[in-house]
Length: 272
View 1: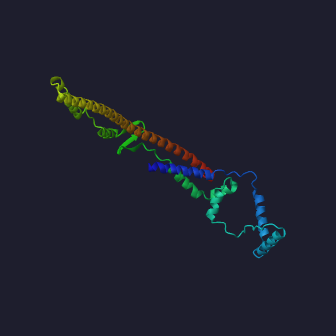
View 2 (view 1 turned 90 degrees about the vertical axis):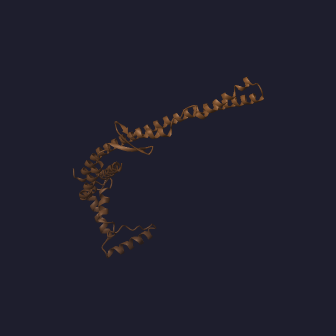
View 3 (view 1 turned 135 degrees about the vertical axis):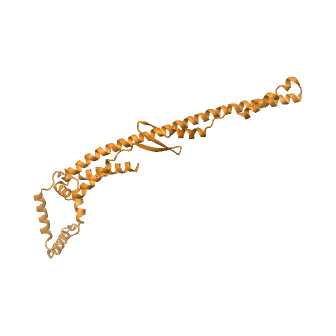
């Protein structure tokens, strides 16, 4: 199911890209281009030229000392702020970035859009029609809406673990027969030896009865375990078929969602 997992992962990445590209409207209270430009000009003038900048910073430090407050140096215009790609990505995926975000996305559309299309194609994979489950260390193929293939071999393996045996067993029959043989002498020859033989015969019959009851109980338990093993194998096959059906549904939903996400990304990037 590696292909299915890759398709779901591609759909998740495309959904994340859609979230990053969402929200192009400027938030309330955002400065207009005119006010932003005025702020930029003021910052440039306040910083001064290359020769004036150290003097202005020193004057600001002294003013902070006189006014008994902490001096905080403003960020310098010449200070490094990152590579062009880092700035482009930061502007493109800023939540509610407004016109700046739209401009950055449009600039990066030729890289973002092909990747979005690749993710959408990866998410739109054909759902698997069958899957293989391991039951009793044997392969069983399951399909939605069809009986599993391979359960007969599983049944034979389970049957081999629970062979049938006659009840009572030969040993129990032999013990009972010996006891029956030792009982009659007491009636024919009423003496001490006959009494001992009769007691021994009675003991053997009791032992045979106990053995027989134990064998009956063991046979019932063995049949119960046998039936439980067969039922468990079928439950595992049904569970595998259900998981296959769920996976098919998830892949179908992911493919549908990927199409919607791709349209949304195209719209955000100005390509649709």
